[in-house]
Length: 587
Image 1 (cartoon, rainbow, N blue to C red):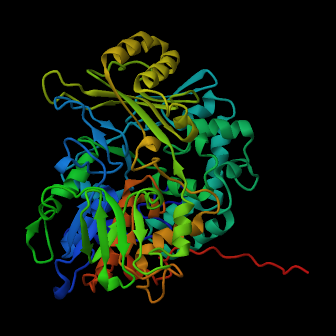
Image 2: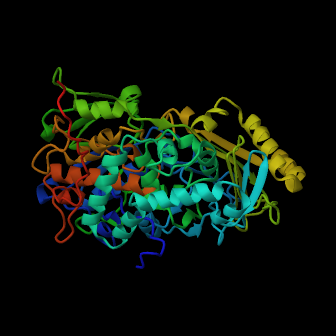
């Protein structure tokens, strides 16, 4: 690869560069149980991406995973909704159009998601991302009341005073601190170089916010106005000015895995991936045909309210559900957002004074920061926006922040609808502005601003808003979520390292998290991943937990296919520790 060519987005996570897609390609499995442990019952709490991936791989390895889910749905198995933030709504069976209320775009670097999706029969199509000239007819940046129609982000260099400087300095800063070279090292699978360079970045910038990096002379060195414009125009998927107080490392991880990349969406809706995990027929370790649906009797069990975690790992975990049922399992994998351990699920030990989670992990759970996020979508008969400036993506400093137009092709049945206009997709304080607003109020507010930005389609937009059907969500108001996902702030690296390392217990020869009890409870899910919000990394966290359960039960990797924990002591893999600077003792 030429050093001057744009490096590809990273297809492995730099903090733990294990290739999960290669590990599970074809018929490969995360491991196998010894003959005496086959059929061991394992509780998997949460039927989101992480939980379903853990359960699916545990099933293939010889366990009997029992899935629990708190979310309800009238059309889900047993009245339970699969998928977590893989949440697709098809408002009518005749519609080809679907609304993605959670995950909706996936970079081409997300090989694990694509691999599972291909196995389950999903169809991937390019997503209309901002500045994606080959896919998106137009990206309109609306800022300070002015409109700037573009095809590529570099078009803004000649259209907006100051943007060229801001964007150029941002890109130069990424190269100067080694981000682009890390991407090249990942592509070349030079993991030693990845480790060295990422260690330097973590040591130097772990205490920096995104905003400080944009403004500081040792970062991009932008003025306030340049940073503001860059934050509105975007520096990657969803990296808005509302993310300025995030830790810089969080933004760099986002850039590493998604920039540059082509974003894809699932034609059938991403909930189909969850349904694939659930219903897809696979084989267990003995070659017998089976599925999660089969071994769970057709439906997940109801919400978990308490976990009794034995101090002796061999005695497992007792799961208590909202309907009064209790059952002991050889192990348990907990995948919902971890704030539920403080607000909705009691985790206790039969031994007085002994908590199932050590102090460091409890501290990390308490310090998680969840981000608000809101979407409002309008489902309409036809893509009425074709040929107008609304056809594509609108980025604005006004209330909607981001609007997208999607066409799902011919309707599936008579009277069906094919088109979706995402009136708004927002985060943080922008989401909070409408958190208390009704669906009708949200639609009216977003239509007001979009009509002003796109006057040639304003009347048609208002008519379509009155005749179409809208759907909305604020993830911070969802009982079992309380926010879309967590994002790290400056100083959170150690917390995130401890959460990620929980699956390792003491399997590497010493506790991966000092002071952590060696019991049969495993934490997984988006909160434990290094780069939140990306489904690929949530799936990987479930695979980590599955590996840990198998190791606890005496299992091992298949020959020639070491799992994530098998490489923990390899210096190219174990997550970096912060190197403490030398300090002169005070006098």
